Amino acid sequence: MMTEILEPVSRTAPSQQAVLEVKDLDVDIRTPKGTVRVVSKVGFSARSGKTLALLGESGCGKSMTAKAIAGLLDPVASVAGGSAHLESHDLFSMTAKQRRSVAGEGLGIVFQDALAALNPVYTIGTQLGEAFRIHRGASKKQAKVEAIELMRRVGIPEPETRVNSYPHQFSGGMRQRILIAMAVALSPKLLIADEPTTALDVTVQAQIMQLLRSLRTEEQMAVVLITHDLAVVAEEADDVCVMYAGNVVEQGSVETVFNRPTHPYTKGLLSSVPADAHRGSSLTSIPGSPPELSKIPTGCVYQDRCPLASAICREQRPELRPTGPAQSAACHFAEQVSALDPQSEPVTGQDSER
Ligand SMILES: Nc1ncnc2c1ncn2[C@@H]1O[C@H](COP(=O)(O)OP(=O)(O)O)[C@@H](O)[C@H]1O
Ligand SMILES: [Mg+2]
Image (cartoon, rainbow, N blue to C red; front, side, top):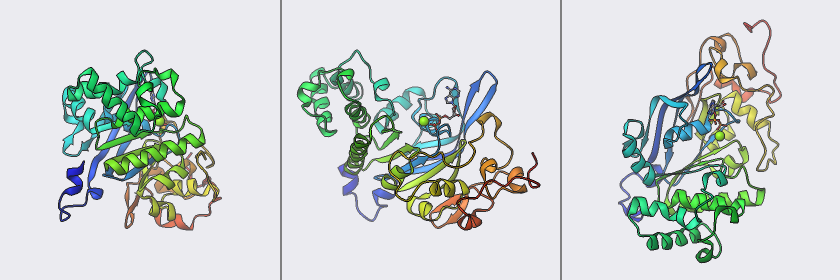
């Protein structure tokens, strides 16, 4: 980590380097009724020392995107197209063995449910030490020393004694700290945190976000933060990728996108939250609900809820295109979004073909 910081400044600053570059990612799920595309042409990049948020309602494909990148898709799901590079490593064209080694060292992932992610029959010390034994050839004794050090780094009190405890002996917040410790054990370049605080109460949520922030800064990790919480994005992220029904509908810097959204969905999300929004506000106030992924209409994925929808939106899927200096959106009418009345209802009637 230090070597990067000490490199000559004439090179691209570390904060600007893309650690993760995802392009045109498609993920399919096999169901009894046929194959369903749950992630469609998703692309983004995550930079060293910065947080990229994947924002969207439940079921829009955030976790599938994360699992595809980490090589952790369920057997019913598969990557159907696109690429993901972790620095110079092409993650989708590696053998399983190469991938385990690259991902094991280079990529850490934290899930929402820490209890399910920990093994109930092994001590925390054993589970935290495992990465050092597998990837660094550490002895049992060395691994335990490393585990204690990790526990200290993530703020677990009395690590020398707690190292011998089992997962159920920790609170939810402490278990999430342990999961974060496991994810950062080998100083990965990339940390993916999938709704890391959803299961926790508000004060603990803030502490966990604070921990992620300080680890990111210390290690200059790129962080991909998955959330359905606008306030978390506003507070924690540098860049945001807004997802809807498996598609990216808008992306850019948080400042730009939140100040001047250029997709009606983003605009709707932002106006549905009161100005004094706090953590935990959910994204459900736009009338209607996302389409079933097996029944995504021709044309724009957002047409059924969109106040700007017209004939072209029902016929042609809009591609992501630049809508500002650090911003792009997939909307035929992006230029009209800023004038939208926040209370507008979807357009129906003679324009509609259904
Ligand atoms: N094992 C599965 N079998 C069938 N469908 C699934 C499975 N896992 C997820 N899905 C579907 O894939 C879509 C995307 O899911 P997910 O990525 O978990 O959404 P998010 O994380 O944004 O809430 C959802 O519509 C969900 O119903
Ligand atoms: Mg999810």
